[in-house]
Image 1 (cartoon, one colour):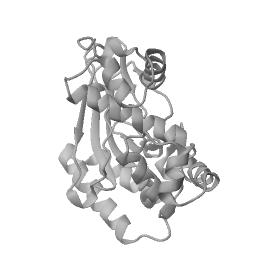
Image 2 (cartoon, one colour):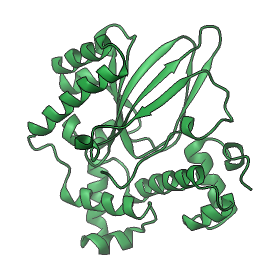
Image 3 (cartoon, rainbow, N blue to C red):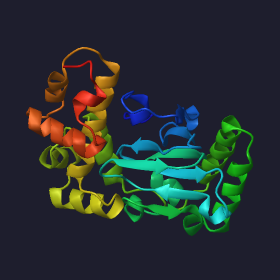
Length: 272
């Protein structure tokens, strides 16, 4: 199992009124080191606008639009996000997603994560006809559990038929250290830990992920702090922030607004 599991805003905040249904599902143990979760998003917006907030989480998603036609528009990949995004819907829509850990995404996507940074690429453009057939299976499945069975069969087959689609060992080791330290890594500390130069680490991150080690660590630190605030009721907002290296109120508030789009007191109104 990966030492880091991200969290998204529907699991945290009740400050935003919405009729959307968002739910996450755990992968089978055989895939838990590669997959953070599967998720569904059902948007109910027949007579009004509905919004859905997406937070940077250090992961890459394959997303299926279950109502999309033609099939070529029915599945797409979203890369690493470096700031929050708010999606607005004006009609009923249904999505199914596969959230891949960034250190293993290349095993399934066959390209470095940096190819998908801050954007979307249609699955057909990556997998060709195989992507269309897979999308058709997912759209035609009878419910979430059947979709998960189809996905897990596919992903396990991909793992067994791997070519040279692994990320470099340096990236794997560096990300493991970042996850284990909750993103509170300086590039100097990381370089000593993995026994590579800072320049080499920066180059590998840029080539593979499309972001610097500092930017990726910021995302993981924010996610780690967010999970702590959500799951542990002890400590004020600022006490928890200090534990994660946010050195003052302004630093904490600016980082929170950058990654979440709201101030901390709105998301956690009962924490002072």
